Amino acid sequence: MAVEIHVPELGESVADATVGRWLKGEGDAVSAGDALVELETDKINFEVEAEQDGVLESIAKGEGDTVNVGEVIGTIGEGNSSAAPAAEPEAESAEAGQPEPEAEAEPVEANGHREDGEVRASPSVRKLADEYEIELAGVSGSGSGGRVTREDVERMIRNQNQGSGETAPTREAESPAPEQDGQREAKPASSQPPAPDDGREERVRLSRRRQTIAARLVEAQQTAAMLTTFNEVDMTAVMELRNRRKAEFQERQGVKLGFMSFFTKAAIGALKAFPKVNAELREDELIIKHYYDIGVAVNTEEGLVVPVVRDADTKGFAGIESSISELATKARDGKLGLDDLRGGTFTITNGGIFGSLLSTPILNTPQVGILGMHKIQDRPMVVDGEVQVRPMMYLALSYDHRIIDGADAVQFLVRIKQLIEDPESLLLEG
Image 1 (tube, rainbow, N blue to C red):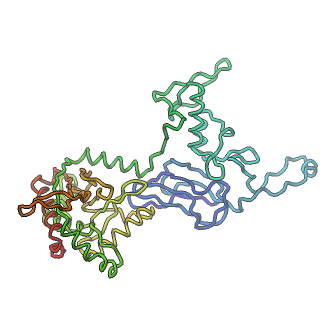
Image 2 (image 1 turned 180 degrees about the horizontal axis):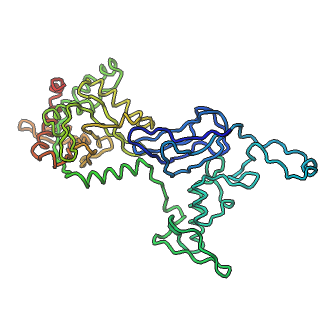
Image 3 (image 1 turned 30 degrees about the horizontal axis):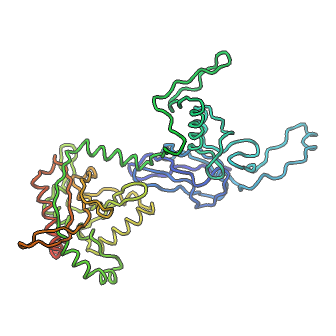
C-alpha cells in the first residue's frame, strides 16, 4: 500500500515552501530515514525524509513548484526497484483469452524511458512539455535515473525555437490552438528573444531564499529612511591584545579569539548608551528592546543569512566566539533552524573578510541599525604630532532616520570607536 509524502510543518509564520530538488527519482529504492527531497523556505532549506522502506512510487510536485504544509508531494510504495519478474507463458494467456498481466514491479528504465515506453517526469514537467508541444519520448533525461527534468524540456524548447525561428510562448499561454486545414495556427511570439544555446547564457532558477533576500532588501530601501554615517577606528590596541592572548585563549576556551567578539561587545556598549538604535518601529509606536540579540551576517552558497547570538550581553568573549562559530558552521552546512534566525535586535556584518574597504550596509528590517566592518589596512596617521603607520578600519552605521537622529547615529559610532581603541573598557561595558 502506497504511503503519501506530505510537506511537514515549516515553522512559525512559514506556510509554504518551494521544491528545490528531488534527491531520489521515481522507482528508486528508499529506506526509512533517507532524504527524499529538499524544500526551500524563505529562511532555511531542509530535507524531507522517508518514513518507511520501499520504492519512491511517484513524484507529484516537481522542482520549482510551490507547496503548502500538509500537501502531498509524492508516494512511497512497497517492494523494491528491481526489474519486473518474468511474465507468465504466452500460451497460458492466450488460452484464457485475456491480455498478459502487468508486472508488479516497475519495468527496467534507461535514459528516462521504461520498457513499457513511459517516460519518467514529474507532473509539472509534463505540463510544461504539453504547453510547448514537446514529445517527452524524444527528450533525454538528465535527472536521477534518467528522469526528465524541467531544464531538459526548456533546453528542447530553445533548440526547437532556434530551428524554426520562432520564440517560445509565455508560460501563461493558452492550450494549443486548433488546427485549420491540417495546419496548426502560428503561436504569438514572445517579446523576449530566446536565450542562445551556444553556452553564452545560462538560465539559473533563483532559490526561494535568494528571492526572499531580494524582496527584503528592496523592502528595506522602500520603507525606511535609510542613511549611513562613517568613521574609522585604530585597531592597534585590539590587534596587540589579540596577538598576545589568542594562543592562551584558544587553549583554555577551545575556540579562536576573533575580532567579532570585540565588536559585538562594543556594539552592546553603544546600544546601552543609545537605546533607540536597539529598537523597532511598529506602526506609531517605538519598541525599545532591553535585551541584546545580535545578528551576525554569514555568507553561504544560497546567499546571506543572519543567525542570532541570543542575549549576547550575558556572554563573555568565549561565549560570543563559540556562538558565532557554531552558527556559522550550521549556516554553511545548511543546518540552521528557524529559531537560529528568528528575531534579532541589531546586526553586524563584516565585508572586510572579502576585502571590502568601505560599503553602506542595508538594514535588516525591522531593525533600525546595522554596523558594517571592513578591511584592516595600514595607513599613515598623525599620532601625538607624528606620522605613524597604523592598522585602520572604516566603520559604517546604516540607520533608519525616522527613528534615529543624525547626531545620535554619529555618537553611537564614535562610542564603538572609543571602546575598540580602548579594549580594556569592553570588560566594564559587559
